[in-house]
Each structure stands twice: as C-alpha cells, then as structure tokens.
Image (tube, rainbow, N blue to C red):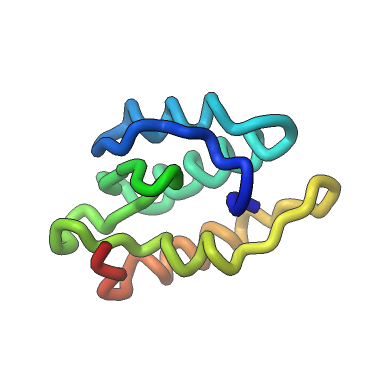
Length: 105
C-alpha cells in the first residue's frame, strides 16, 4: 500500500508530521492510511508517532526510543482499493504488534 508514490514529508516526531503525511497521501489510499492511524491511536493509548523515510512509524508508549512496532506489519499488509477493510482483525494485529519489542530504526 505505502510503497511507491509516498508523500514527501519531512521527518519528525509526534502527531503533526503523521497527520501531514496522512493529508498528503494521494487518492483512495488517504482514507486507508487515515483509518490505520486512527486504529493505532485507539488500540494503543499513548502511542508514539513519527515520520521517517517518508512513512509513518508507531512505537509503544513505554518502549525504548527509536523502536517501532508497526514497521513489519505495514510492510506486509496488502490492501487494494476495493478490498474490504477488516478493522477488528487489523486492530487485533496492531495490539499484538504493540506488545512485541519493536524494530530499532
């Protein structure tokens, strides 16, 4: 979903760069990215957010600095324009991913 054509957003930490990224995503992908961001925020209260390498990153609230739990999930999540979006399943994966050590990046 996020490979190729990513918005060119300056790297930064916090809500503002992630929301700038979401706003800059083209076409139908914007709504998917907005929904993913909302699911992460709802599923992991206090989640840390950043934009790096023109992609959003999410870290566990109590996790070590520069570790991110969504990197692998987003890399392998395959969503197409007309596919159903199973929010319950994706929220479950987000919750599981947030409990893992995360990737240092």
